[in-house]
Each structure stands twice: as C-alpha cells, then as structure tokens.
Length: 206
Image (cartoon, rainbow, N blue to C red; front, side, top):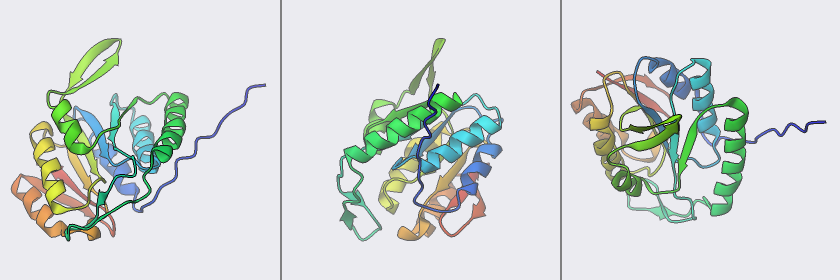
C-alpha cells in the first residue's frame, strides 16, 4: 500500500487571490516568477497552483535567508527577530519540495538575502531542464521580504531592468512601511497600479 503524504504549507497573510490573478495576467510574459520571503511556503503554493492551472512553462524561485537574523520592519529602522529559524526553513522545504514533486511544478530555493542574490545572479538564474537556460527576466515578483522603503527601492532597482512589458509586481504588507513612497517611485518607472487590497498592492509594467 502506498502512503500519500500531504504537505503542510500554511500562510501568514491575506488577499492571496491577488497572487493568483497576477499569475493569470502574465501568461504571455516571458521570465521567472519570484518571491522574496518564503517563510512557510503558503504564498508560494498559491503561485505554483496558478502557474499549473494556466499551463505556463515557468520556473518559480524564492529567496529567503532564514537563520533567525534581524529582520527590518517599517521605516523607523526597527529590526526584529521574527523566529524565521533554520528549523522553519527545513520544515518548509520538506513540505514544499514534496508538493512540487507531487504536482510536477518547477521550483528553486535560494537560501540568501535579497542583496546577496542580486550580486550572485546579476547575469541570470541557471535553470536546468533537458538543457541549461540562463534566465535573466522576471514576469512576476512578489515583494514580501524586508518591509522598508530603503530595502524595497534596492529590490526594485534590481528587477526594473529585468522585467519585460506586461510583468507584474505585488507588494505585501503595505501598511508596515510608507508604501506611498514606493508607489510614487514605481509609477515614475512606468508601472500602473491595477489592484489594491488591505495587505497587497499590484502593479503591471506598461
């Protein structure tokens, strides 16, 4: 008798339909889908399910250092330890990679801070599927890592030249920092706001 394991991928936010809608919008946009901040993998599951439901040949990547390091929260230079431990990472990855195996959805995890990822993969992310593909474009980015304007501007400056027309950015926990400053910056870069919820704001590149 085969034992079927059921992965546990809990969430910690709301408005995940925004991520599903974002994936639906990028069906004709080339590139990776990316999530900064993995935690327990619940948001990632929504993205992976939407990719599969829309039959897109996209690889999803997630970036998160874990390690229970100090985590920027808000624009008052306040840093906290959010219990994002290596044990949480290990539990998440066991469940998430099991889910990906069961669903046959491609996923790559990078145990890095965002800036470390930007330095090491500025020329693209190698994806191995029969052949090696070096992908340096991003169809979707879910910003759910450091929640400060300063950190978000750094992330935006990395993804902006790597996001083609029609790409989507989703910002999470917009009440934890001065999102209006981020909104103004993104609008100047040529992105249009198309969806707002209590927790998440979504933009499309014109």
